[in-house]
Image (tube, rainbow over all chains, first blue to last red):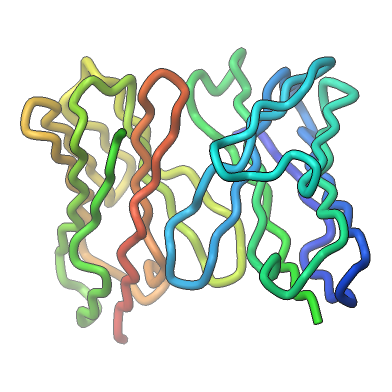
Length: 117
Length: 110
């Protein structure tokens, strides 16, 4: 199946710093990518939909100035957690669809565990 | 708003058993339903995708069924193995609005 690469897999940072997470579709083009966060023992929650060449669409309750999303190319979307605080510590994961080969299937990155001290 | 529930939250079985994981959803007007596997601290692996017009999908020892009218899906795992231990998530797609259940944490004991 299609491959989605996400980096870094784990990051520890100090409170107040910004952290950038990359999501790449390695062997297909993704006009749309999705960003989720997951707290321990809870379900994945969609944060935003990243659209290539246009602004991201954020879910209700997600601060767009806090979680900056850039989808500058058909194979790369980035999520930047700005001025991170301990409550932002979570598992962040991206996904994309390969509409040509995978149809409606979602392919996920390996996730990023963010710990804010 | 679509709500997705998975029961049980956790399940422990001896190796070799057949087992069923359940997923229920409140809005039956779905586009498709997808089952995923998540290993600790890792991403999700797609297992099976069922379109709204389909009743079931099979892949190896896995079989997923869908009953849209009753808002239910099941994931059947045959002859479970220790390597099947993971969290299994179902996700319901309503016109590109994906909603996930909280998952069932499966442990298969050797």
